[in-house]
Length: 477
Image (cartoon, rainbow, N blue to C red; front, side, top):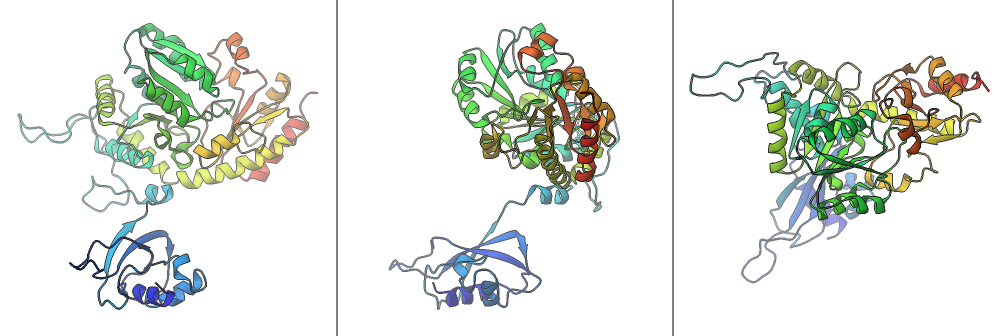
């Protein structure tokens, strides 16, 4: 089909459509008995990221602005599959998936019949029933609440999960996952993970007869050797916390599934904006929604997004039976904060990249752990499974005294645990988030006392860099 003919075809689009669409060729199923094409069939797909202030009356002008008149290489492209002179066209409408930012701000509120711009807060413990023998959709907030269901539906959509569940904290969510296992069954877990997760696996799970094997998940050979017939769950982080090591989620998922094991990925450091582990083969994705999802250090929440109807039913049962569902008010706060998650993560990551580059060239810094740096050993793997390096990084100074001085001297970094806040945070993991791990074990795993972890916020990057530079230069020799 020539550019002129394609332009004529595009002109048949109703002028009431004010958005720019993609024209895609599609096989024409409408053929007459002689086998010739009855009429051209063009695939018309809406591109939500491209809009026009003018109508579609002038496709030639659109072609000129998107490829110099060659419609086939432009935002409007078509190919003849039948007689160009046919008087009628059949259109197939193909919506492209919206971006995360669009999903977050346009998610439908199906529980409100009054057109509220925000999800209502159903701050109630119980719900009236139609009668003594007939139950309504909700009866008791522990079992279900409309505000919680909105957040769970949104998280399922973000993660492309079959279902998502909101818990009182990330640890409550992870504890529920361990309750999927029976006594004698095994969990294979990474050795460089969040301190709270480490405590759950090393001190709580064994009380229920669960065997936990700890390995370096960056080494596929160790993963293969550790998984056995009793392994029911492989527990991963990527990047890991706090050393920011990278794990091959897709490869490990293939190995685990071959042996009949589930794969859990703690995706708290990345957020759904940067990574979707379910698309890489994971079965369960956990988020500490306290971090990037809520984003403002004002609530605690955990989320599990799962694949598979059977697994979803098991998690739903545990959430209800254990009473670990997130309270309506916390769900409402999370829904308020999540609307700006894409914007926050973008700014935080841009700041983190600048800070990581600054630290990497600083004479008083020995090593920086951040996948956004070109010399990070897992950089290529990371960018094959994530859209960015995030805003959590760690670095070594070679001196506990200097690291302690840096943490305590900075002006714009808040000395505290956690990450993902709009405010920049700084900590010494060995004395804070990972203090529950015995020192000998930390040393064996390469987690040294001088390691500083920072979570970069949305402040001005130059101010944060100047703050760190002053703290580093003024510290003890």
